[in-house]
Length: 325
Ligand code: ATP
Image (tube, rainbow, N blue to C red; front, side, top):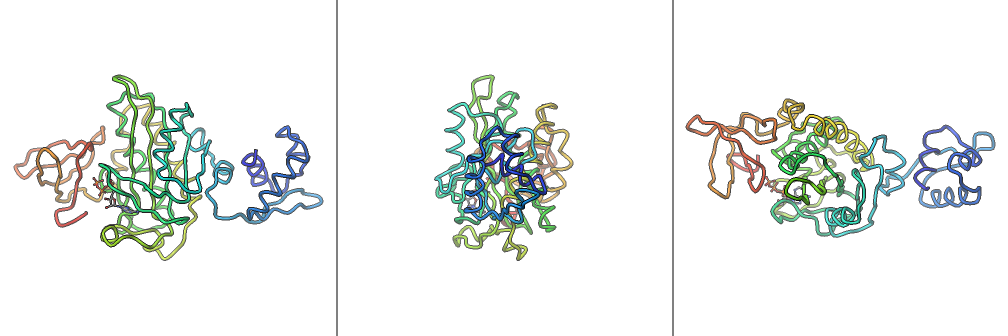
């Protein structure tokens, strides 16, 4: 009910306690208690004699009621679980999936202490300054198509960060987002499948927003929005924006069944496009020129002998010829 009350106060230039009671079928005492809690949390809500409750400012929170009162999506992030601190939002989302939680459920945390990337690699985060979130999906597509969702999320994040920062935003295929060629976001998609059905997919997204400290190893390739622009950004604004863009692209992906609708948009962000790349394939490393993605999200690479090969994201990593990009 906290989110609903907050949503109503936000949406109106004044709403009386009585109007809220009628809309939400709540008692006056219950509404007053929740408004008092919001004020104690830092929401600047005042009660005007004529207009009723008016909100003048709100804190930079990513709590469930803050996000749920602001999302404008049909399903993405309409239910949010907020954890002050957690080991991994992907693990939390997998647990919620096991409990039967619905498509679009989002887990966010202020501090992820044991986040991970692909192939068991670690993911660093700073308390209160970065985004660690995981979206639970129950796709209708067949299991062999589920890994394409990583690229759908990458496109959504790239759109939001480029609009917000006005910096050069690129995607390093398939799952890293770069600002000024530095990695600011990683995406980790995991799934639970039966032979011909996807039980659930969880898409974890880590974004370096206002953090500025990285381990010496990670700082060679990573940065944050703050480091790249000198500005602090609202994590809630970014999360809300991503839910919005992701839902739009994901619905198209489910309807069409592949990524054909977004190939040119994705390739527009692709840092590897027309560049020499090293493909770190466990079956054998090779170099070539990245051409772009195909309708299935595979990277097309032209080998030195002129032949084209499709690189599937699975266990493969792509690097620039002289370094990370
Ligand atoms: P790939 O190309 O295979 O995706 P990757 O190195 O980008 O390779 P990921 O699994 O996407 O691998 O992400 C994990 C890696 O990201 C870690 O090994 C580390 O190098 C780097 N990393 C860890 N924390 C952060 C962070 N907060 N920001 C940016 N990069 C990070």
